[in-house]
Length: 143
Image (tube, rainbow, N blue to C red; front, side, top):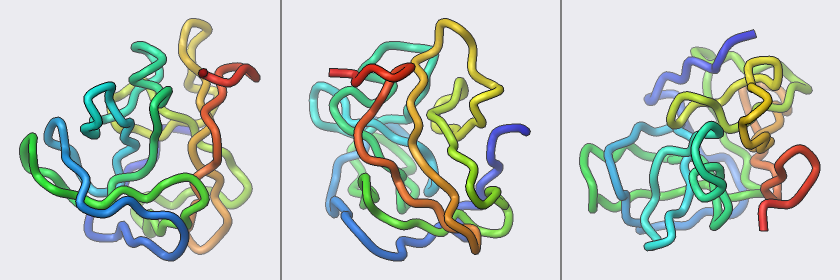
Protein backbone atom coordinates (compact mmCIF):
# COMPACT_ATOMS: atom_id res chain seq x y z
CA UNK A 1 0.00 0.00 0.00
CA UNK A 2 1.04 3.59 -0.49
CA UNK A 3 0.03 6.95 0.94
CA UNK A 4 -3.50 8.03 0.10
CA UNK A 5 -3.70 10.35 -2.89
CA UNK A 6 -6.47 12.76 -1.93
CA UNK A 7 -8.34 14.97 -4.41
CA UNK A 8 -9.10 18.18 -2.52
CA UNK A 9 -12.45 18.74 -4.26
CA UNK A 10 -13.69 15.36 -2.93
CA UNK A 11 -13.02 16.12 0.75
CA UNK A 12 -16.27 16.61 2.66
CA UNK A 13 -17.20 16.76 6.33
CA UNK A 14 -19.96 14.21 7.06
CA UNK A 15 -20.53 14.44 10.82
CA UNK A 16 -18.92 14.89 14.21
CA UNK A 17 -16.58 17.39 15.85
CA UNK A 18 -15.33 20.30 13.78
CA UNK A 19 -13.28 23.34 14.76
CA UNK A 20 -14.37 26.25 12.57
CA UNK A 21 -12.49 29.49 11.92
CA UNK A 22 -9.05 28.08 12.74
CA UNK A 23 -5.79 29.77 11.70
CA UNK A 24 -3.49 28.03 9.23
CA UNK A 25 0.19 28.33 10.08
CA UNK A 26 1.22 27.45 6.51
CA UNK A 27 -0.32 26.55 3.17
CA UNK A 28 -2.03 23.14 3.04
CA UNK A 29 -4.76 21.36 1.11
CA UNK A 30 -8.18 20.07 2.03
CA UNK A 31 -7.69 16.48 3.13
CA UNK A 32 -4.24 16.98 4.64
CA UNK A 33 -3.49 15.53 8.06
CA UNK A 34 -2.83 18.57 10.25
CA UNK A 35 -1.65 19.22 13.81
CA UNK A 36 -2.12 22.08 16.24
CA UNK A 37 1.20 23.81 16.88
CA UNK A 38 2.31 25.16 20.26
CA UNK A 39 1.15 28.62 19.07
CA UNK A 40 -2.34 27.29 18.21
CA UNK A 41 -2.05 27.47 14.42
CA UNK A 42 -2.53 24.41 12.21
CA UNK A 43 0.31 22.86 10.21
CA UNK A 44 0.77 19.72 8.09
CA UNK A 45 1.36 16.69 10.33
CA UNK A 46 4.21 14.25 9.83
CA UNK A 47 5.48 11.26 11.77
CA UNK A 48 9.21 11.63 11.15
CA UNK A 49 9.62 14.95 12.98
CA UNK A 50 8.77 15.84 16.58
CA UNK A 51 5.95 14.58 18.80
CA UNK A 52 4.27 17.98 18.32
CA UNK A 53 4.35 17.54 14.51
CA UNK A 54 2.80 14.09 15.02
CA UNK A 55 -0.14 15.55 16.97
CA UNK A 56 0.79 16.03 20.62
CA UNK A 57 -1.34 19.22 20.97
CA UNK A 58 -4.12 18.01 18.68
CA UNK A 59 -4.66 16.76 15.17
CA UNK A 60 -7.32 16.42 12.51
CA UNK A 61 -8.08 16.64 8.82
CA UNK A 62 -8.17 19.97 6.98
CA UNK A 63 -11.60 20.55 5.44
CA UNK A 64 -10.46 23.44 3.29
CA UNK A 65 -7.38 24.62 1.47
CA UNK A 66 -5.23 27.33 3.03
CA UNK A 67 -3.22 29.05 0.30
CA UNK A 68 -1.01 30.80 2.85
CA UNK A 69 -0.40 31.24 6.55
CA UNK A 70 -3.06 33.11 8.55
CA UNK A 71 -5.97 31.99 6.38
CA UNK A 72 -9.06 30.71 8.19
CA UNK A 73 -10.02 27.05 7.78
CA UNK A 74 -12.18 24.37 9.38
CA UNK A 75 -10.59 21.28 10.88
CA UNK A 76 -12.38 17.95 11.41
CA UNK A 77 -11.38 16.59 14.81
CA UNK A 78 -11.29 13.13 16.43
CA UNK A 79 -14.68 11.45 16.22
CA UNK A 80 -15.59 13.20 12.96
CA UNK A 81 -16.43 11.33 9.78
CA UNK A 82 -14.86 12.76 6.62
CA UNK A 83 -15.23 11.71 2.99
CA UNK A 84 -11.79 11.55 1.40
CA UNK A 85 -13.32 10.62 -1.93
CA UNK A 86 -12.94 8.09 -4.70
CA UNK A 87 -9.58 9.58 -5.67
CA UNK A 88 -8.13 8.57 -2.31
CA UNK A 89 -9.96 5.22 -2.30
CA UNK A 90 -9.20 4.30 1.32
CA UNK A 91 -9.71 0.60 2.05
CA UNK A 92 -12.54 -0.31 4.42
CA UNK A 93 -11.21 -1.54 7.76
CA UNK A 94 -7.69 -0.17 7.24
CA UNK A 95 -6.20 2.22 9.78
CA UNK A 96 -4.15 5.07 8.30
CA UNK A 97 -1.34 6.83 10.14
CA UNK A 98 0.21 10.29 10.12
CA UNK A 99 2.68 9.88 7.25
CA UNK A 100 6.32 10.67 6.59
CA UNK A 101 5.36 13.26 4.00
CA UNK A 102 3.85 16.40 5.52
CA UNK A 103 0.06 16.08 5.49
CA UNK A 104 0.09 12.46 4.26
CA UNK A 105 -1.83 9.41 5.45
CA UNK A 106 0.27 6.21 5.29
CA UNK A 107 -0.44 2.55 5.97
CA UNK A 108 1.56 1.17 8.89
CA UNK A 109 3.90 -0.77 6.56
CA UNK A 110 5.26 2.54 5.23
CA UNK A 111 6.39 3.76 8.66
CA UNK A 112 9.95 3.47 9.94
CA UNK A 113 11.28 2.36 13.30
CA UNK A 114 12.09 5.93 14.39
CA UNK A 115 8.72 7.40 13.31
CA UNK A 116 5.97 8.43 15.70
CA UNK A 117 3.29 5.81 15.02
CA UNK A 118 0.07 7.82 15.22
CA UNK A 119 -3.14 6.18 13.95
CA UNK A 120 -5.24 9.06 12.67
CA UNK A 121 -8.11 7.54 10.68
CA UNK A 122 -10.02 4.31 10.13
CA UNK A 123 -11.80 3.76 6.80
CA UNK A 124 -15.43 2.89 7.50
CA UNK A 125 -16.53 2.43 3.87
CA UNK A 126 -17.84 4.57 1.00
CA UNK A 127 -14.51 6.47 0.92
CA UNK A 128 -15.25 7.73 4.44
CA UNK A 129 -12.88 7.72 7.41
CA UNK A 130 -13.49 8.34 11.08
CA UNK A 131 -10.77 10.35 12.82
CA UNK A 132 -9.45 8.30 15.72
CA UNK A 133 -9.38 9.71 19.24
CA UNK A 134 -6.08 10.23 21.10
CA UNK A 135 -2.64 10.25 19.57
CA UNK A 136 -0.64 7.14 20.27
CA UNK A 137 2.98 6.31 19.58
CA UNK A 138 3.59 2.56 19.45
CA UNK A 139 1.00 2.04 22.16
CA UNK A 140 2.03 4.91 24.43
CA UNK A 141 -0.01 8.10 24.53
CA UNK A 142 1.89 11.13 23.24
CA UNK A 143 1.37 13.20 26.35
